[in-house]
Structures are given as C-alpha cells and as structure tokens.
Length: 369
Image (cartoon, rainbow, N blue to C red; front, top):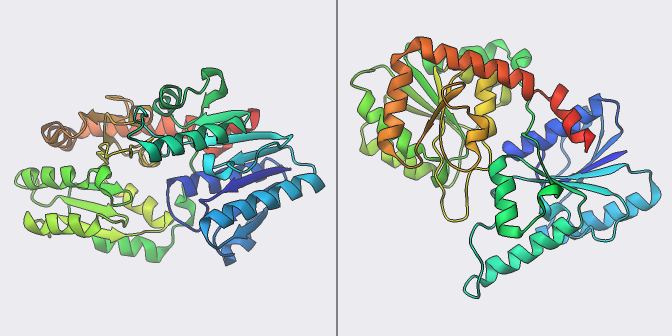
C-alpha cells in the first residue's frame, strides 16, 4: 500500500491540490492500493474516488499531530510500501519510522535569506524544515530553482534531491453544453484574448499585464484580459483596472471549474503570468504554464523562480525580465502581432506537455523513487 499524506487535496482548488489529487488518481490507476490522509471535512466527491480518503479537521497544529499519530498506528498494523508527503510540514512528526518517506518541495515554503540572530523566526523555521527532511529518504524538487535553493539555504545534499516536474490532467472530456455557452458569452466578439489563471496575490504580477493592456488597447481595441482566481490582492487589482479605465478590456471570472478552465484556455490566444519575488514568496515552478501548453496556447512568463523550467524561451513561450514593464508589454505585443510565432510556440508546448507531463508517464517517475 502507498499512503499519501497531504494538507492540500481536492475539492480545494490550487496548484498543490491538483498535484496531490492527480498523484493519488494516477497511482491508483497503476493498480496500487492507495490511502490518502487529507485535511478538511469529508466530501461527497471522496466517495467517487477509487481509493480511500481519511480526512482530518480542527486546529492545524493539533490536526497535524493527530494525522501523524494515526499514520504511525496505521503503519504498525498494515503493509505500507511508501509514504508520499506534499511538504515538510506533513512529515514533521514522522520521526523514527522504519519506512520509506518521499517528500515534495515546491520552493515557496523554503526560507531564502541567510540566517543570523536578526532572523530568529526564520531561523527556527529553517531548523524545523531541516529536521523534517532528515525524516525522509528522498526529496522531490519541482524545479532546478527549488533544488538549488534547498542546497544553498538548507545545506541539503545534492544526492538526496530528485527533480520531478509536476504532472497534470486535462478535463476536456468533461465539458458540457452549459459551460461552452457560458464561456462563449464571456468572450462574445472580443479579440485577442489573453488569460491569467492564478491566485490573485501581489507576487503573481497581474498589474504588469493590466498596465500592458492599457498601452496595447489602442492597437488592439477589442482585446480582452481574463483573470480567473481569487485572493487577497483582488480588490487592489480591480481598483487598478478602474483607475486605468479598462473595465471593457479586463474581466474577472473568480474561481472556475476544471472544465471551465479548459474552455477558457481553448479560447485564449496567449496565457500570461508575470510573477515577481515578494519577500520570501516566489514561484517555484508554474504548473499553469504546462496547463496552457496542453491546450496548445503559447505562454508568457518571467525569469522568476522556477518558471524557466516550465517555459522554454522561444520554443514554448517567451520569458520577460522579472518586474520589467517594458519587457512584458513588448513580448505581449510581439506574440499578438505574430500569429505564426504564436501558433508555433503553442504547438511546440502542446507536444512537450503531452510527452513529458501527462500523469500516465509522470506517475512512473514518482513510483521509481
């Protein structure tokens, strides 16, 4: 049996949620007996899975200890082959287990400053992370950036880390007529369409794209920028749109379902997300770029964190200088003005995504560990 212990799991929406749910689905399809220990309340969708899901709720510190204690008891009474964990937090209390533990690292949770007496909190966090990783046999980094960050910040051995880019599934087969009509009404006669699918927070860089739209709308008067997602920066971004009088060129979709996401991408000309580093927060990889590539859509990103692993510059998309408005505006205009280049990058991205990132093949990389 394989046990997956995770704080992030469907039906919650997010990159790690999609990764851990996809991993469980894919491992189960290979014939493995899978048990998922997940946070949150039990849901109706849990019953539709081909594997068992046990939920843990309550105050987070106690919840993590209860989950760890349950797992220790479960291992003592069952034949568990391997434990896969979504992050160091899920293995912090799993010390002294005589079983193989593989933990994922995403970049965002790793402290990035050099530590001294002025960074007491960060230093404590660093010690907790290192201690947690000592409980593990292997660490899976989601990008070369994350691997190098772990080596530099935490002094983790190179040999203990394996880079595996996340896997992905596309839900094109589950799109219904109502979803198609909804997206059709959203887009109407707008052209070109550029899209961002991401939590709306400062480091995702929505404002850079909005500023570019304010410059380019004179050349592309019917252009529409779709922003899907919610987050703490949403009202600030909406205020910025109003300030630049872009209400007709920017539309906020909120959270959307997986089938709706596929439809939006199918109808987009460019996918764009232009992250920057904000404090300790950085983009570890950028799975949404692979999602866009699956749909044959060229991407624009920034040279931030692990994004250069997700986008191959001038092959599957374009990379801009981080935080550089001129670079971002120029690259959007470049792709919108050159349909042949746009289609070429989208086609290349689709081939790469389906060859390297589908769960059918990606799950084997995790199982080989």
